[in-house]
Length: 397
Ligand code: FAD
Image 1 (cartoon, rainbow, N blue to C red):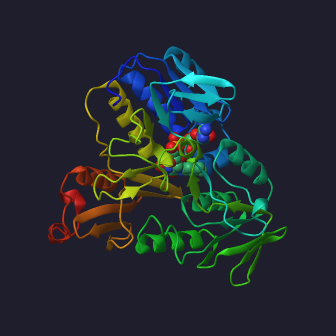
Image 2 (cartoon, rainbow, N blue to C red):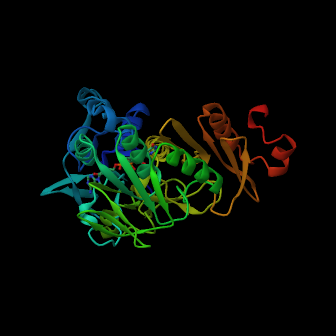
Image 3 (cartoon, rainbow, N blue to C red):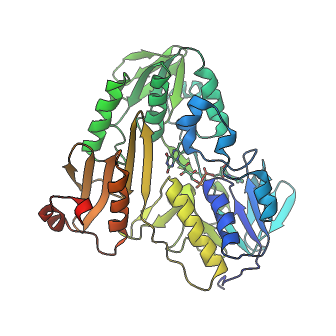
């Protein structure tokens, strides 16, 4: 059995975050007329998370985070079930359970996102995470009076938070087990740029020095250093929310496994955004991305698949951004850990695999970033030789 185009079918979307909402909106934009139920475990309207570690910590304006007003859901006839958790999927009967209630579906979209990874550090429960608006509210309150802050993790969220806390005048130390910042996502050269930036704004960095304990007085590092702190932020990565899919017998491997059309092995069930592992359209490797771009582009692709007869192959170019102090880091494409890095000028790094350009990292340079996204969209990426002959000047292409 395959689930063909079905513009009048009943769609249930589990997870009312950035991706789940986009799926509902795209379905309506694409002419889906059937019932759409958007179920979200968090209270309130769907909201955007990126500002939680950026502007929200400064301005505290929660309404600005809402992706759509309440009236939108009524107007578009999207049933929003906030504060409701889907407990189980009955694939045979094609329905999900919310408490005692059973909601039938013709198409099910899993957009369950991620939760914070809690590493086995003694006393880690004393640390605060930053994933939800509720977390951000708690952190904002803690930032109201002068504090000594320790951050566990030198990835995007830890660094964004550290930069805001410094701008607000707090004392900030950050510990990262890896020898460099954002090691999973950027080149060594870009890590170095950001190391200097964070030190320049006064953050004390402890690199290659993991945290072993969170105590009432602060954090203890692997080398025995004690970092005093009144507030500890845990930003050590995330885990995909896969348990619901797993209990329903769907394949899990660092996320809910889907094919190039973002379908699971059950043709009636798609998975998308932070919670899914999908084949990278360029390398073919199974990847899981944590980004607004992936969540929203996945959503658009799934909406098309449900509402049209065309088989949809997901092919978007990944891109990311992170605001840290007065720098906006943008990454177009996806580099492998062993990809070659070619720094160009002070604020750009090009990444290459044997097949050609894989990613472009820029600081405060939206033009080059947009150009890189266009170049990476082509089936054949520019080779290193080709770009070398042109002094790696993307804007000249
Ligand atoms: P989410 O938006 O996380 O939504 C998943 C939702 O599903 C959650 O609300 C969850 O409660 C709900 N859910 C889970 N299980 C169930 C269930 N069984 N029943 C009902 N509901 C359920 N990305 C960027 O690209 N740029 C940034 O600058 C950036 N900054 C970020 C800053 C912070 C502080 C955070 C936390 C994230 C940031 N991200 C950023 C990541 C981005 O927010 C995510 O990639 C994006 O939200 C993923 O969308 P999603 O729909 O997959 O998951």
